[in-house]
Amino acid sequence: MEKNFFRQSMPFLILVTVAVLATFTPVLPNFDESKYNVADIAWVLVATALVFLMTPALAFFYGGMVHRKNVLSTMIKSVVAAGVITVLWVVVGFSLAFGDSVNGLIGNPLSFLFFQNVTSGAPWSLAPTIPLTLFALFQLMFAIITPGLVVGAVAERIRFTSYILFIVLFAVFVYSPLAHWTWHPDGILFKMGVLDFAGGTVVHISAGMAALAGALVLKRRKSHIEHKEIPPANIPYVLIGTGLLWFGWFGFNAGSALSSGALAVTAFATTNISAGAGGLAWMFFDVLRGKKPSVLGFCIGAVVGLVAITPSAGFVAIPTSIFIGVIAAIISNLAVVWKCKTSLDDTLDVFPCHGVGGIVGMLLTGVFSSKTVNPNGADGLFYGNPEFFLTQLKGVLIVIVFSFVVSFVIFKFINLLQPIRVTSEEEEEGLDASQHNEKYLQGTLIISTTGVEIDAPNTTFEAGTAFEVSSTTVRASVPSYPHM
Image 1 (tube, rainbow, N blue to C red):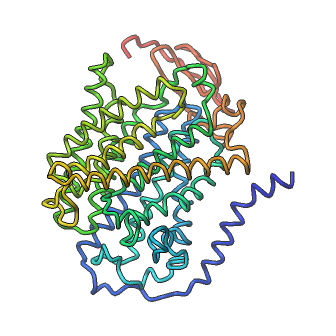
Image 2 (cartoon, helix red, strand yellow):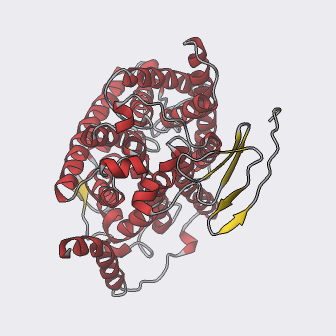
Image 3 (cartoon, one colour):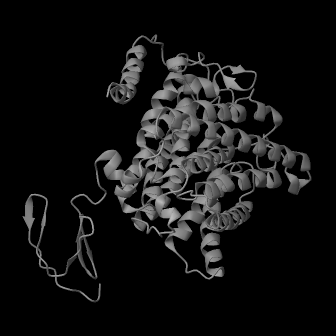
């Protein structure tokens, strides 16, 4: 009993301790506005908000795909990262990712502890026209969504408290080192010459490999073992989530130019085009394989196109983005087909879509990158520079191994502290009820062609039947509408 109380109280006590310590941080003057470009500040502010929008968008995207008894639990695992990572980022996350480099491996945690030296600090060397505070907030949004992506692989079976701990450990031991390696001028991948415009390695490959590790550690769901088909709870949610992700991705990629100039325009264009091409390629490829064109197919393909263009958005020519979106969608589609033939239970195909999509995008950056598009980039294999393609390949392999191994250890470590997976009874009941005491259809009526269904287990009321909901009696006489 005491042990359970200690576990339950620890998150609250840690948060309160951090809140108290934050009050002792020295107050420093704000940045000097005269040093910066107002247009660049305005654009990156908008881009920061757009990237934040991607987190609730992801919640809709994932929430619509799972069983209806797990909708809320899946959605909150994405959104709660906005709280956990925000606090962690201010305390030490930004320091680990962008603080003074320690041998190119990690930032000094004291560099920006509790955001010291941020508001009045010099601008980031690669973003001289915007204040350091804005750069830190923009990068925060990337750190928020990355662990949220992993949710899709472990949905419908991971404990909420265990996932909170995973978010913290993943941010400290996987995301922050990778961000430092890739985007810090002294980072090991940056010095190697690896190019990742907006997060192909840092966000998508890292999340994809963590998803693979999580699926292996948590093992298969009961429904997966029994080969039960789980119908998506709400396909319109998926469509809404896709639209919001697509919209937010303009900030994700074009905002990574860190200015409002021509490079941002190019990244904006390649982002939109790759998404459209990816959605069409996935849908048409499904038809080629004998399936019908589906809403889910287009949505998933569009997201894969967005994933694949992320590392190259500011390095490749605009027409090339069509090729990147199409190829990535086809390869990820085949990866999903392969996964379905194995015992791997990656619930929402995070590894085939984000992991494989990110890998494809990074390698195609090595093929099609052009210094004509971005003088600070490199010419790729297509333009006579095979060395750069090999550099991208080395970088991808390093990130794959690092992300998978460390994430696997994190999941195993959490499982030693407490059961990482819910019980079979909780899984059967659904995580909305067992983990949160809430239900997606709480107080909701569904009218269909066969009758009226209320949120009661295994209860269906035919058309024309009177029924009761909660403590309030609601009498309904619903005629049958064959044309609905």
